[in-house]
Image 1 (spheres, rainbow, N blue to C red):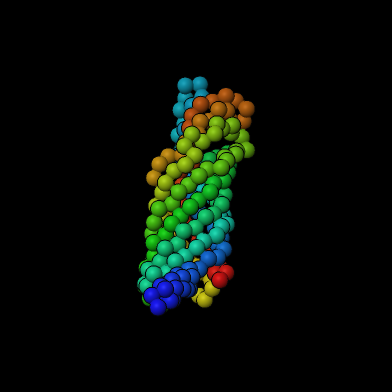
Image 2: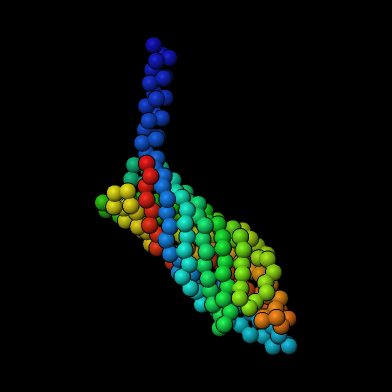
Length: 196
């Protein structure tokens, strides 16, 4: 009798857990405020801000619902571009945001949490760059999500907490010095689709 009770409890708990678990695909647009650039040539130093351009992200997510709250880890590939005068810089990275959310009114929820960033590559049309020195960094994000059936639409702000610097070696073939900081500082608009 005791064995049947334990078996029933285990089955019930497993079913409850899986009924509260969802997973799906996600993607969207990134509006990155980019970072800073310092160029040193012939003892002259020029400093400026990189102008952000639109990028994109694609990935997957899982979501565990717990009463009015949820936990949502995501894994995504992000590509963003930035511009400084005639130089464009493209950065590719893997992002791992983990959101703690609360369901507010009907389909609307608020969420926040940490984000791990791992830079894959950096390329430029006129600048020669060393590899990024700190490939991994952490950040924070906050946002809101609207859920319409299997489709979710979210708006979030994401900020890196540490610099992601690479050394500048040359500009249009001319040796120079300096640094470029592409620390994430972005707004994103995302759409997700529930698969289960």
